[in-house]
Length: 151
Ligand SMILES: [Zn+2]
Ligand SMILES: [Zn+2]
Image 1 (cartoon, protein in one colour):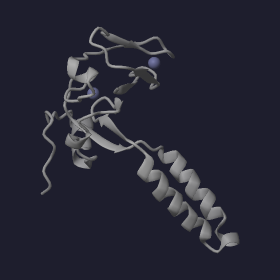
Image 2 (cartoon, protein in one colour; image 1 turned 180 degrees about the vertical axis):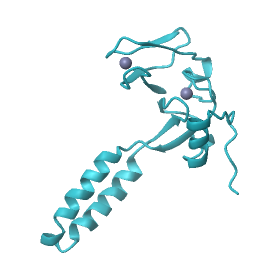
Image 3 (cartoon, rainbow, N blue to C red; image 1 turned 30 degrees about the vertical axis):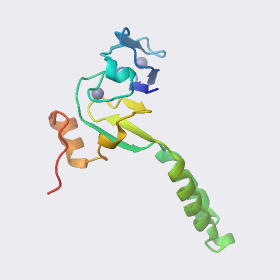
Image 4 (cartoon, helix red, strand yellow; image 1 turned 135 degrees about the vertical axis):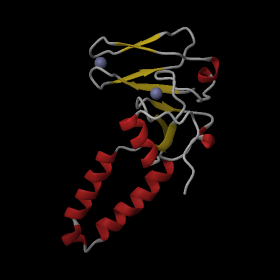
């Protein structure tokens, strides 16, 4: 089952919902803002082609891992270097390797930052592309689901 986490455009809170064709809006628990949603049958089957929030087709996938936790772990490991002769960094590297393999991927909409978990067509979704991100965010470009080719 695909789960959807919409970023509230008003207060930035996460709104967690399941795709449902009947649901026309998703309501923010924090500020009561309601976000219009357009779910189709594909969404309820975990297929992601169109964003149910902004109707764009440009997504990227990444590991569902908080950067903050990564930085915190690194700082802790770095603090222990003088006592462990650097072994703490090796432990961190092993933890990272172990954790990283087990972390599932999350798909994110470039335009509205909605997160999708449990997407069944994950194979079709590319990794993050900086140029696409800049063009979508700053110049409102619509790639219509055709990722930039490497050049
Ligand atoms: Zn809100
Ligand atoms: Zn979107």
